[in-house]
Every structure is written in structure tokens, then in C-alpha cells.
Image: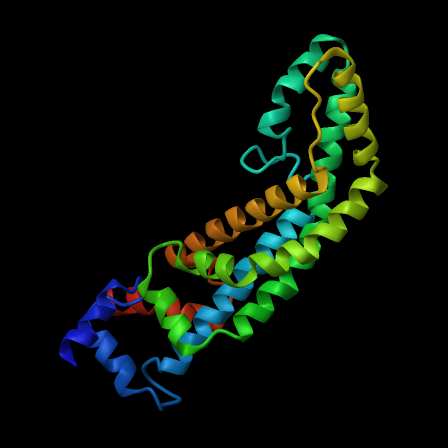
Length: 238
């Protein structure tokens, strides 16, 4: 049992085996030291805050388009196409296509929050402790495993609709119609699938950033339970 308790040392939220022992000893207490229920509740709230922040940021205008880390550009197989078109004076067509792809992703990001919240609600104590004992991206990896399929199903129709609404499909068609006139090798890429994949990548990128804030930045702990759970290390070392 002592070895098991010492394993809690790898939690970023506790500073000693004594703290972990205290947590488990008070697992049924509603006052004083943190209970296991407090820890799990704190983690779930942290993840809820983080995923909501990610979705809100990316669903805003320019959430994708003006973030260099996640901005959706032409797929690798189309980069030669893009370069050729720009050299032929069709740069504005390419720019409109890129803007429309990012607008589609921003529109789709609005549907991410309820999917993440549902995954959090279904999280077991075992899942939560696995995240706490895992690496810095343990929560993000949990979400990738639990939500990627749902995000894909939810994002794809929204993105397809957004691409049509913003004329991205038209611009995409224009890009390759023009390019194919000058190339013997025709290009046919599923724009909707590509943008959906990049949008999901962007969501998880932001979720990972939020996870790091919650783990390492006291200022990011915006509610009482978060301060209580994630502030326990600071309290014990002061």
C-alpha cells in the first residue's frame, strides 16, 4: 500500500506521499483535506473549463485563420498547385479558398463543447486517476480516444455546409479547374474531409494548451474547486 501511495508523487498536484495519504484517508470527508471525490470533481471541472475555452477561441472569427499554429492551408498534394496558380496570377482565388476553409472550421468548432462535456460526464474514477498519473498530455489523449469519431461525425456536415455557404467548394473547384488546364496530372481532393481533419487537429492542439495551463498556471484555475484541487501542492509547500 505504501508503494501505491508513493506512486501519487507523479501527480502534478501533490508534493509528497503524506499529501496522497491524507487525500485517501479523508476520502469520505466533506471538510479539511481533499477527498478522492474532490480530486475527480476538480479534474472534471478543469477539463470542462479547458475544452470550453478551446471551443470558444476557435469558433470565433479568425480563430483558425489568424492563428499560425493551426491555420488551415492547402493540403501537401496541392501546394504545387497553389504555387503554380499564384505564378499564373490566380493568387486571389487561392486566398479566397484558404479563407473559406478556415471559416468552415471556425463554424464547426461551435459544436465541439457538448461532445467534450459528454466525454467528461462519462469519465470514471479510473479514467480520472489515469489522467492524473499520466503525462502532460494525458487528458488531451483521453479526449482524442473518446471523441475523435464523434467530432468527425459532427464536424463534417457543418463544415460541408459552411464550405458551400462561404463558396469554398466553388473556390476549390475554381482552383483545380484552372490548374488542371495546365497540368497533365489532374488533382481531385475531398475538401470536406481535409478541412474536417485539420479542424479536429486544431481543436486538440488548443485543448493541449489549456491542459498545460490548468496543470502549471495557478491563474488558470478560475473556480473554487480548481483552486482547491490544483492548489494543494502550493499550499503544502508554503
